[in-house]
Image 1 (cartoon, rainbow, N blue to C red):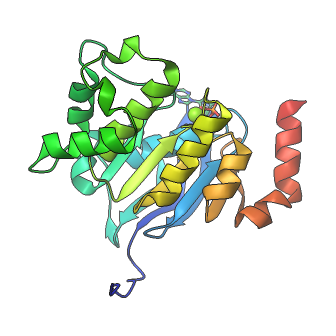
Image 2: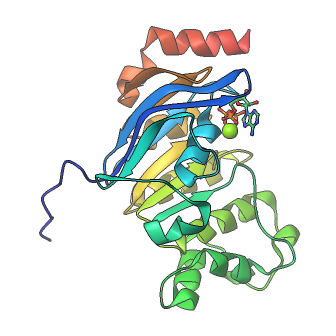
Length: 237
Ligand SMILES: Nc1ncnc2c1ncn2[C@@H]1O[C@H](COP(=O)(O)OP(=O)(O)OP(=O)(O)O)[C@@H](O)[C@H]1O
Ligand SMILES: [Mg+2]
């Protein structure tokens, strides 16, 4: 299959993003370029600013300074325009509406002219189609995490943002998740504490510590980076 030449401007960029919550610097001059098709990990100790970074990309948090671009154009994200712009996200934990069935929840994510077909395809892909008529609350946690993924995939995003998708999952479920991420034909932004998963699926990893970007590189580079080791040791102390 012929591939289009990659335009330098394609993809998502964060340019010198700073976010303050009162006196707390949640993101301190963070820049990141996310090239189409890549899987980019964002790691760091608790409170490092990972979810805040996602919230900036989704328009839930407006940065005090810095800018975003999407495909080379200024990007001022609004939560209700995200799927239209090709961006879908899962929430940390499980985020379903419990008064609705699994299928109805996943339909909320769909945006194309054929939402039913996209919802079913996403449910199949996540192995939860048999639970389509169930209420999410009646399912085990791991299944609910899969429904959360299906909801995001139903939007057929170009950029899939996953906030701690492995949280609370066992080794088998994490292997399944790794396969799904590796097989995804989209750009993936992955916030995750599970290092083995991050190291196995990411092309590139950004490390935050107290809002500051302390390292950016390949899994091999991040694994052997002294500053990264120090940040995690400090957090564990
Ligand atoms: N809306 C908010 N108002 C005030 N402070 C906030 C808000 N959102 C986040 N924070 C603070 O900003 C810092 C970064 O939080 P964030 O949730 O981005 O961290 P995180 O890296 O996702 O952590 P975790 O690994 O625990 O999910 C934390 O100190 C947090 O308490
Ligand atoms: Mg978080």
